[in-house]
Image (tube, rainbow, N blue to C red; front, side, top):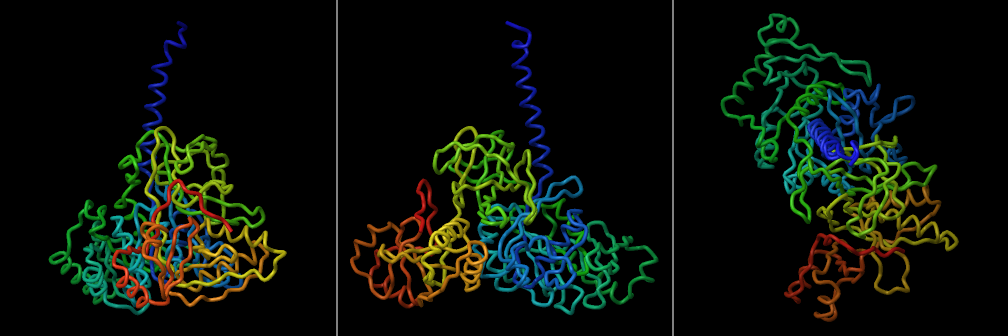
Length: 555
């Protein structure tokens, strides 16, 4: 036996120990979160300011940017820039204070809530953004329930404190009474509206005063202890006394700070500030990194998978076509769940059983991308997608593991999508198939195969407009929509056999989804309830079952 061969076991053990120590360090330093809010609460503005303080950008853009103002980083799609709204999820990774942060930016518009649901499946934490004047709003409540289902830790940022708003105590009471979620303010506002001067940090017993900064730049902060005599020169006495009285009330009657309750999603740390003026953004970011949950274990076919599992695994939660229109690319967003991802590594595809070499993986930052050599649990990377990946797919190395799939939710608007130009059918088909893959809209088909036009099924009207816009601008195809007049969709439990057992059904239309499963469309809830009364043994679901091992049908 040669000397080199006799040393190989120790060398292998040393290499394994080194990999494990790198994995532990990387997991401890990762933080991953999504921002949820109602439209116009300031989500994209807060995202930009977090990037600014994280050093990822030098100047923050305003969402309603005009003229020479800088466009926002997270809104990269042309239609987003035109309308000043977020209509697609994106990923923004940056380093801050020895941490690597993966910020999953979600659509603010309620018509794209299904994209948000998928993104929340990849998040370890959520930041719930509220408008101080409006408090809890419908979309925020809806997305909160998704977080609660997954026990995601929730951090609350009450925004727009520089404008007239509700009393802070009332905003806390609304969260506790309506969401049944305990609150613990990490800081407390000194004044509001034009009199918003800063916040009191409860943990450090400090006053943080802010001064307005040049547009798009970081605001200046001044930290003072509560007994510093200079405070009375800088802050109106009545504003400070009121804030201290309210804090005393919270100390006596409020919740206690408990890290375990934060991580279980039962207690939300609350922050006050103004993203537009940068007031309170840095204190929020610093406290979030201390309190947030790191990459967490994930449910799979093999039980909970610890992020420190040495073998790589991850799942696809989003697909996006044409992020770079010049190259007509297709990108799969993969959340790393365990082990270390390496460039050019060979992995297994759980749904198909195929082996894949993952070349040219990309670090994502809005529309910008750079080739990445490795990634760790909590990270999101972009993979070139030649049509092989579907939302919910698991990729793994070593022993087989398959993560829980991501379900489809019930659409509420249905329209035939017509292609008036037969010569453009090839591009029409390509566009419809790719947009269906990425989940921009659900596609249904008539059971009569002679009717080739697809049915667009969406949560809101804006989804349909986006599909038409993208077909025209990205695929060169003009289309026409014909509303169908249905408002409710239900999947049939048991598939076609269950439907055949009850014979003919009335006051509804039978179609099939992309996986050839029967879907019933109803004009209203009354028609749905009538069918269920007539056929009590028929079971219908508003959520499409997760698909495994089946290839979808294309147009």
